[in-house]
Length: 318
Image 1: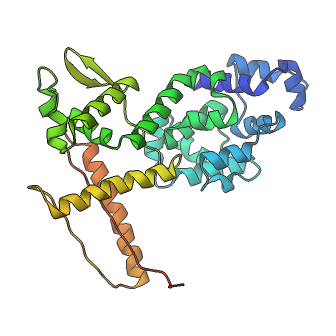
Image 2 (image 1 turned 30 degrees about the horizontal axis):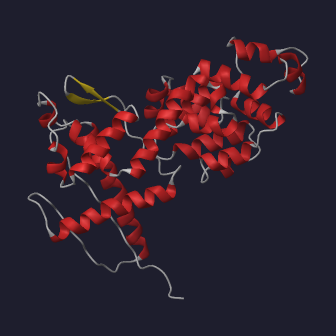
Image 3 (image 1 turned 90 degrees about the vertical axis):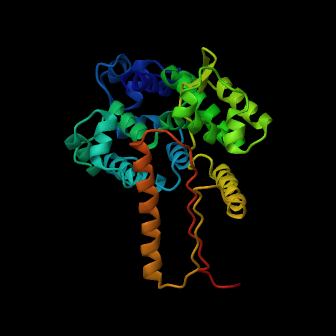
């Protein structure tokens, strides 16, 4: 993250000289030169103060990046930065964050609690670990082209994100690519995905072509090999996410009326107390998280869709 931090400081400075920007920040020395050289770095709060003094709308940038947590940023002081990070953390454990950032659990805990102020590279690493979309925040603050260390990643992520919403079936194609059956093929067989997913041949061809175009897929010795992960970001594309959920819910409707062997489609229309409804919601979330945990530690042999819904009629008619 050091190179990203250096480039972000430089992009924020704009056309001003290092000396002039240091004076603008209230320093009698020239710390901006040290920051851009990577010899030392400002805290996250000091970086955001510098952004404000450079005319960047910090609050608007964070509101676009994480609208739910943005109010916690307040005046973007040290304690507010810690509060924002803590809100962003959600249910992520300190242990997981430490593993993702390469920092100690003690250091991560202190940053989240406001006991220690994270320097800019540490702050950037935390944001990346918590959201996996650091380049989106940087792009809200400065032109992403001025932070070349993130430009390729940013371009690929946005192409991947657009693809996920434009072609919902690419997600199913990609999980099938991971299965043992596909990896056992000596060469790609046209129609292999279409037959298994019950989709038209042209949809298979379009998905594969666009996956190759976005750099997520390569053809190696006649067979497709994954080169990246599909990015689906609900925060950045709330309307697109609704359409994606509707796509898979529609497939659930189709398979409810014409189930395949092994399909499980269940429902239960209920009346419970509000307290118990909250317990059911918690169980719903736990189940979903447990499924993700099982998937993370499993061998990819078969592809499946887990489609979970909890619908309520908890409203007063108008």
